[in-house]
Length: 458
Image 1 (cartoon, rainbow, N blue to C red):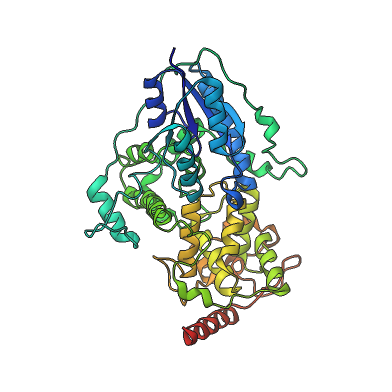
Image 2 (image 1 turned 180 degrees about the vertical axis):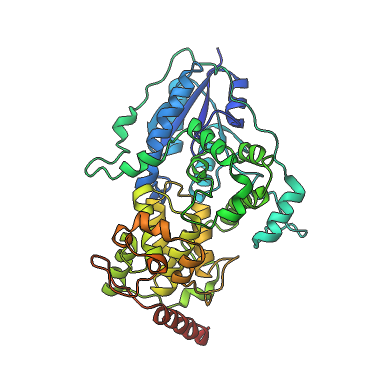
């Protein structure tokens, strides 16, 4: 009797539009497995927020598999070693999975392919990363021409595949770890209360979120920059864990009308980020523009104290503090506010963008190597497609421009009593609320001086 196949799950925790699952089912009995591999990514192992989401996503995926006559096997360790051992136990020789483009997963795929027959399929992006090229056959560096070419060459994506009604099971199941024994959930202290109130991980939660968003997609362009209203999709954590495919989102949203094109362009930015890390695997740790290697970022005790204040939402800038507190409480931050807090850390505090990227990696439920790295390098001006370093966001005017008053009142209760424009920048000290770490003009001048000093040396 032919042995079963292994379905290797990573950031693709869904049954619908899951090409690897479809192929594995066609080949015979399937052993779905998730490997908790902290060794292969090393310092890029999942942060605390992502682990909370992972626990619930795996639990719901196992329930969905069991409803189809299957189950989820959990193992822990280095991916190639775990899969080789599982193959030995079950008699499997073939492994099915979706392509992943983070450098550590590409290394793992090569290692697995040396020991087993590995079949990788596409399905986590609108188009396979690396497939959209310039006329000269090279990767795009700039988003706008990339997005134009992506639309012309490969969109719309193929219609999503339905989830199989049944999944063929092996004659006997291998042993599995208990999810609870992985200790993915925080306990002492349990800092995830806000997560539970706002999120429903899993494929069903992703589809519910998509339906909620589809009803307001028509006004996306008008509302996406307003932190105080529910204008964004909030699909990013579900996409980060692959609980829903971009093709599923595309085909549901594209027919909604209104400003859907703006939102679909954001899905295109996600594809663009994966193409960047495919071409430049070290993008999360290295400046894309080498000239920035000589920029004198602040360091020492004062800079570390400023970093801690930024992390805790105690900078004295209401919009910045609201964003950082929202992040800590909910594991998510509004996109416009992400830009503001990143610019503040980099420009006003003159702290290396990598410190912010690392903090987001640990605290975001939607932590994604490609997007996180590309977005931080965009803000820093260090990326292949980036904002200029000398363009410095003014957080106080950004707060007013995007009508963030109610957003600040929700997340910075010390200021909730302030009327009108005072919520953005109180003219008088407020008891219990810190003074500004640095004035806007002073912070801007310090950043520009650092830039000028760099330009003199390069």
